[in-house]
Length: 341
Image (cartoon, rainbow, N blue to C red; front, side, top):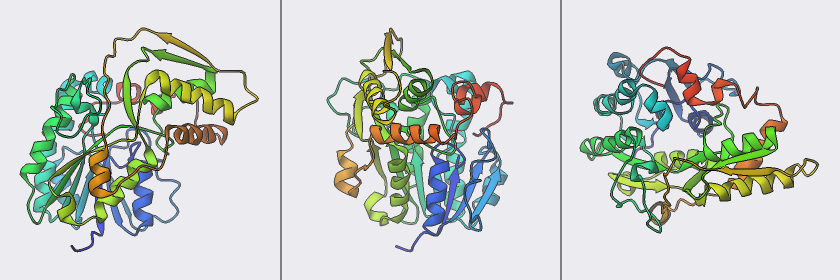
């Protein structure tokens, strides 16, 4: 296998991309980022050497832009999407266009442009509801929202283009947590840590729902690994990527405990539980990716909470409870509708 040298990252200025792109640059890759920069233009301000970074402020639905931008790239990591159920439902027509209709043109143009590896970030929420002990990759996809449905429908489209010269792989990530220069506070661990730090109080809706979690450092390390592995290892494969399956109530207790350890001078954090109509609950198995790719996450939910506390103490966030830049749906409500995020 010829070494991959240049990576095209769609949605690269998002929550995961903001951690991934600096890692790729440190590994010596040339990186192109395509993003609307909806959540700010300062995501990569902390990168000292940007000589191998090209930032393209543009729309993933712009076919002409894709044809121009993909030239010279030998790999794609596709992160761009309207992320999470509430954001998708804000404008279902636009969301379908971004998450689904724009997908096949991107894959086709990538292959036509000489891209040799395409990594697609799907989601483990494609499984919908399941009472299985651990949901494996061959579990039926029973999505309960349009966001889940269209993420899942893209998977067979990608594999339609799989060939000896075009390696396609799909990752179904768990809910990502931890600190990023493009921070999100609308993800379970991050939400609870934000409220614990600022309010000394955690409000849990439901609590019994089980969710798989993955630290953002492990998520981004995995994308780096997928660029390095031989074609035959990953061609046409689908992998769950998670670490700790925990109930929301358990996550709240972890946050409470870590806060007490890191900030012992604070009063004891209170936890309040209220009913919830969010019935999503599932546990995923990540044994396949461990067995086949030797990928084992190294960071825990506790680490994510500690990283966020450290960032709070360092003053990295501005009004984290109210600033819309930390919340996808609030930001999208305040911006003009466009195709990509």
